[in-house]
Every structure is written in structure tokens, then in C-alpha cells.
Image (cartoon, rainbow, N blue to C red):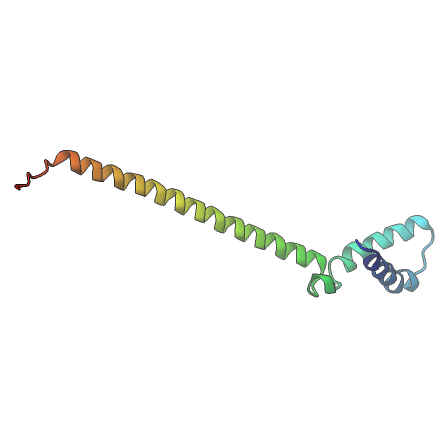
Length: 108
């Protein structure tokens, strides 16, 4: 995270969580801030650097996109492997046909 990003995070944290609440002790403050970061900042709040979607949604979309690309690559690999096997089989069939039929003699 860059310095500007951290400054924005701290400003948001202070304005949306810390200044709106009173904490009994440091342990409660840490717990509430952790909950705020996890439940609000990462799951609900829109982030401009991520195309105005929450980080959790951005991550889920990224994972889905990567899985889709991996599946497409797998299908592509299977197709090329199958077509490669098909090409090999075609060559074998052509060779078998050549060996089965005698070639006609050409008269010159």
C-alpha cells in the first residue's frame, strides 16, 4: 500500500469508526476496529482503485475470471490434444489403406 492509500484508510477509519464510538479499553477498540475493517471497509465500502466495488467483491470477481480463463485453457488444451490424436489416427488410416491396396501400374 502506498502512503496515499494508507492515509486515506486512516482518514476513513477515524471518521467512520473511531470518532463515532467510545471504547471501554484498548482491547475493545482493537476488536471493534478489526470488525469495521472486515465487515464494512472490505465488504461494503466502494473503492475507487478497484473500479468502485468493495474489495471482497473485487476479489470474488477476480477469482471467477481466473477460473473461467483456466477452464477455457483446459478446454483448448483438450481440443488440441484430441485434434492431435485425431490427426495421428488419420495418418495411420491413410498408411493402412496404402498398404492394403496395391497401386495400379502406370503405363508409359
